[in-house]
Image (cartoon, rainbow, N blue to C red; front, side, top):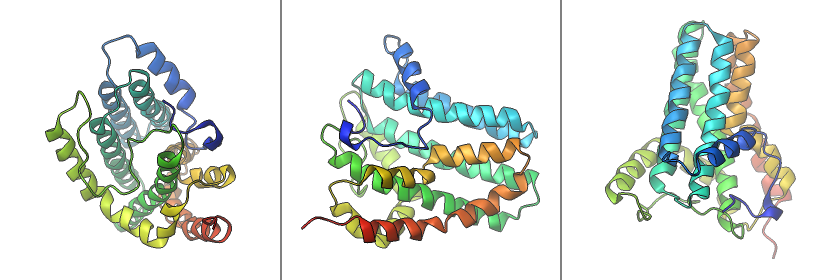
Length: 259
């Protein structure tokens, strides 16, 4: 199963790790490695990247951040290859993302002259940016013929566990997920609630929105690290949020539900 139907696929600037992720998934297809194991590996890669930032090893940090993005693509690919989709993996993946994002920014704050208040603001902005991308992308995914339906447009009800996973774990992870992501989801929904009524988005629009995808955000952080622009990372992502209203206005003006 592909995430999207062929006609809905677009150039995704945040998905540069997909090719390597597919290679990893194909390599692990006939092994005992599960998608959850791969998710744990990308979490480990993120933690190593954070340690490298702390030690001012920025080139190594860049390597492990990019590796994290590649492995992040591999877990979903492996789940599709083995035909073992799970809400456990879906929520665990997202929880690792948000906690690693927070720790990366806090570590950057620690080794730079950035204030903690600005760091919290940047974290809020990064999550809001990513939520906008995910909102539009999940709408496209769930309405795409043959697309992956594991993610939901509105995560407001505990899903029923799929075959091979524990309902207790699904419920537990869902509760944490809604706690840490719920506020961001509500903000974006209020800013563009009518988007959920659309059946699709043009490819050019999704490519533009992918500039807010987590993979592209991490790529920008990596580039600024190796350029030794660490002092600019936090303020950059605060300013970068100015694109949010621009994208929403573009959606409302140029992409509407056909009567």
